[in-house]
Image 1 (cartoon, each protein chain N blue to C red):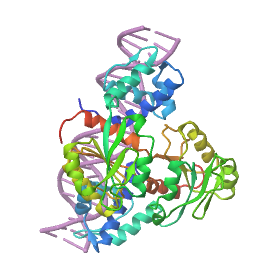
Image 2 (image 1 turned 90 degrees about the horizontal axis):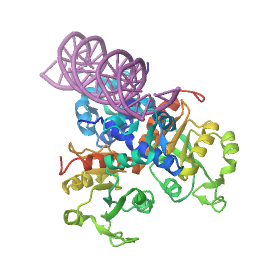
Image 3 (image 1 turned 120 degrees about the vertical axis):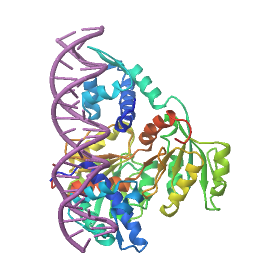
Image 4 (image 1 turned 90 degrees about the vertical axis):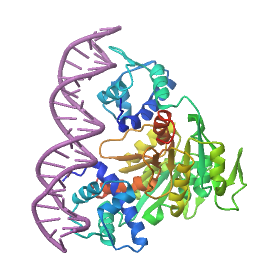
Length: 209
Length: 209
DNA sequence: ATCTGTGAAGCACTTCACAGCG
DNA sequence: CGCTGTGAAGTGCTTCACAGAT
């Protein structure tokens, strides 16, 4: 069956709420309550989950631990994912220092830069390699995800190279509208884009309505 | 007229492509070419723009400069927007150091933290203030946007406070599924969420298809 | 000849509403 | 009786296809 992409985008939110519930010691939750926590309708949650199986108990709800396990399995969060960072400037360093990846199974295992002065720098157990070696390094030791943190002008080039190296998922921090072939997954991580659409609504309403 | 939210989300992408075209010295562009650059169908671009007016010339296309001006006006990008950062930890510092905001008219004008050791720290022209003073500072000097970069446990609280202070747009970096009242705009800026949905597709296909 | 602007058709996602199980 | 799972109805977004402007 073909699952609607929006459904896939919501599943990580569900896992997050379920983790919180588990931490609170809750064993069971209804679609109603989960929905209230997430700002999503209960019907939507039930429908979303129904694409993958029947995880609930009628009259009772969902077992928190069990549903969390199922969702993690469905999303592939029950394994480690290898990532390569390209661009070790200001932004790249912040990404290397971000502590939110590892606990969720995402590890940056390579870092590249074009700037010779940065090549050889060490961050924890990681040594920055030359972008010239990107293809050879990733061919020998493939990664699952590429993180692009280079200036806009060279971002499309870097993305093309990553794709050529077999990287099928890309997290793009560069402010460009990048192109990728069909079948390659790219997500923009960009505060400015998010801001620029919110301003439309700010502009068009006065006061807290 | 009520504009579909997805349309609003695409407009910033259009402005970005148009800026690039202008930098290249292009004066005119067709929906076809713009679409190719952005990975969007030409019909969608024409339809999206038609919600706001008739900006093109039949047989010719759109004047790049003019369309860019119109979109910036529509989105409210022709003015400055004031932002307050809450949380000046590792992530907050990276946000303060990010140089992508100012050129687009977004300025961080206040920074708050609960940690007494951080209060008083200076970043460029900005002095970190105590989170206790958040309400009084923002009441006297409102901001348009709140940026939340605090630990998950207190993020919802911070968001509630910002909303109480009249902030109607929030950029949330904290890994929680936050709740906001109707009419308040919240965007999640979260690499991990983006990764967790991409893994679904990685897991479910082998090779570059 | 070319490319826009747009009703109408088509598709995708959400919500409803209820049968059925615990 | 409460709550899930799900066809069916409803809504919203995208694409088509073409009249009309240059």
